[in-house]
Image (cartoon, rainbow, N blue to C red; front, top):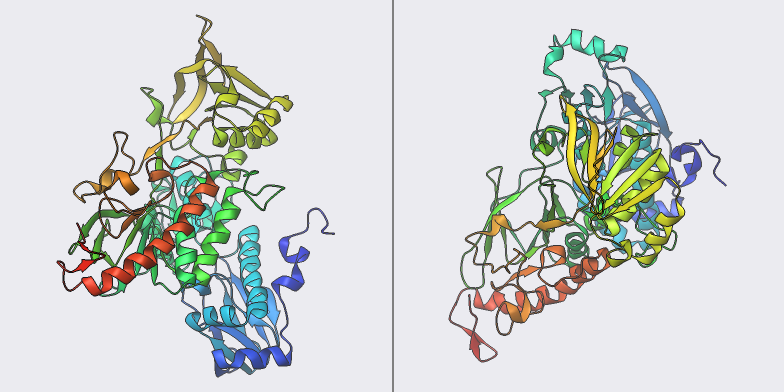
Length: 568
């Protein structure tokens, strides 16, 4: 049994650092190439892409953490039968730690493509290796090892934005407050920084970024690589929520070449759920981020290429059966034989005059550990009555002093699952205020000081000294970017599919042949994580059927299939 307070490295040391026996090493030899290193030679360097998983055959290798002052601290030592690697290997992203030979070393190097082949061909070994890679990333995140350094105050809106982006993408980072952390002051002096320009991000490569956008930060860290403009993917998936990731997993595992695009991070709205308790197979529940991280890693295991953050801005077709071109906001293009739209929805905002003044610091659209830390032991207000709102309220109640749950309807049971209603009623520090609407926000300099609301049955306005407001009031379809693409939408902006899109369409196919829509963005879809995952799996069968038909027709738009001309 794990002792409370132990790190993941201590709790699961044998799984994080497994040792392959001689027979297992022989089984993996065919996937790698032998290479020797001299004592003192670097096998891995922070900020550079590692050559692959390294199985140590002889010698000793030290894995080292390098801090912002170039100080070195050993993390682990690998000997014969151990292997070097963590999740960055699956996506070809830069290493987060250094690895240096302590003596002459012989190692078997398994490149990323061959590593994925090993995991599939050697299932039992692949499971052990994959588990170790995941747990090593968890240990790195827990210890705050590697990644960029953010200089700024924790409550600053841009700091929260940058931290949220890195957290949702499973990337480690360190936050140093120049007012309280001595290392931050030293860095400011070393680089001659103006404290008024904070936040500033120091990338592992040594590059300094002044209050960067997510795209700029991602490229500095090597999270996003250039996409080959000449490569024609079998399928481009737009959106990395549960529906899009399910498509990536099933399509890639069945041999299709897949690229996944998302303008922000993997997980979508599901990734923001504090705890999902009604997802099949998880009787004790699972956080949305944990569930989505597993899917994200699983898709990469099968070879899906992740381009996150990379936002699609337009969709065009080269003919009745493609190929399709997706323009990205950074100026790149993606070509694919088919497209799956899984763009989900954007969070709805309250119609309040000064809402935007507090959105980066005090108004939140999800409840993660980052937000919970900001409002620990405080009173908070939460608006919403759906399952996401219920999950958020329960989570925040476990972290804060009190949660005021403001609901426009007269009864939670109208819109929320019964188990959540019962859970909320059982918690003394959640007060459900039905028939209530927010009437005003008070504060200054981006900091919320008070929230006012008005119960429907009363003319008296309630005012509470609250610093954090959580909004779970639904979402609108993320389809504005599809203008001009000939993809038909319903009156609310959701994508039409199946019979509503045209005669002979697959249930998930849009008005454009070869373009499919799944998950929350699809009209008439069931807004549940399990339903989104199901559609993500279901669409793969339709993709196979479409690609089999489209390939022979691609060179002849007027050719017939099944007695009819393939319509645009």
